[in-house]
Image (cartoon, rainbow, N blue to C red; front, top):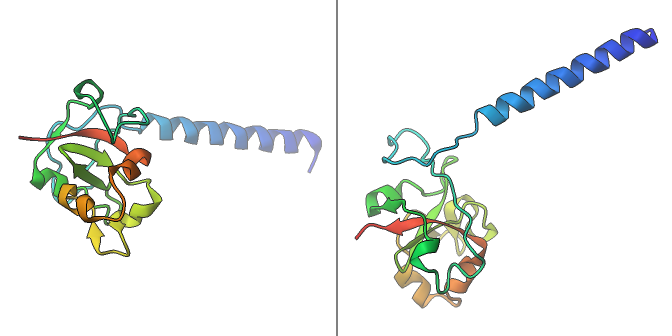
Amino acid sequence: MKTNSKRAVLIALLVAAAVVLTACQANTPTTTATTAPAATTAPTAEPVSAPAEAPVGTTDAEIPDKTFTLEELAQFDGQEGRAAYVAVDGVVYDVTNVPAWKGGLHAGGSIRAGGDMTETIKRAPHGPENLEAAVVVGRMAE
């Protein structure tokens, strides 16, 4: 291949990569879902970063306005590519990227995401401080 041909191929590859990256960024959701997703689709809610101390002593101002019923929370079970959420003391946490909750399962699979873990965490060998790696995404509906 001539140098000009190599340069043209390289430029074409760079342009293609830029187009793909731009398309991926354009398809990123930018709003939080306000209604429960259909059972056949993966639930989506945009996580909102919380302060490091969020699990212990989270103030109402630090919790996003999104509220979840137990039925809505159950859809976030971490299975089949869905996000994994758990609730503790009325606060809902996204544990999708927390290694101890891989695939929505915790403690060897005996505990599943998608529910209120308040009583479970009281019996656990650790407390809610282990949720520091999670992101606060909302609160439970009253």
